[in-house]
Image 1: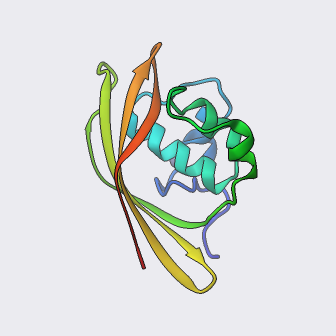
Image 2: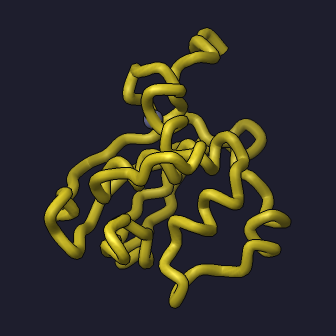
Length: 135
Ligand SMILES: [Zn+2]
């Protein structure tokens, strides 16, 4: 790996501490659906099930236990294709992204369109409205 360990896994090219790290610490909430999406991806990379749990809508989320026990994919990169709404003053939004990960020697692309909503002034992930997995 040639990537600097200080760089945020979400691919923003910013330092982790000033990017998703500040949301993972819990002092700040991600201001938009897209930043929340990035921080959740980073949480998967860094194996932070607690963060994934608390940024997931309580009506659709799995148990914290199952997130802790779930196997962590070997993520390679995140690409945000588009985000609709999901801005600071909105209530709902969607983010379309491709997350690449590796299983053995094979690289997979997880292409998802996700919905987010704002609950009590912070964004949570609701569900995937479209998921495509390809190699
Ligand atoms: Zn980040």
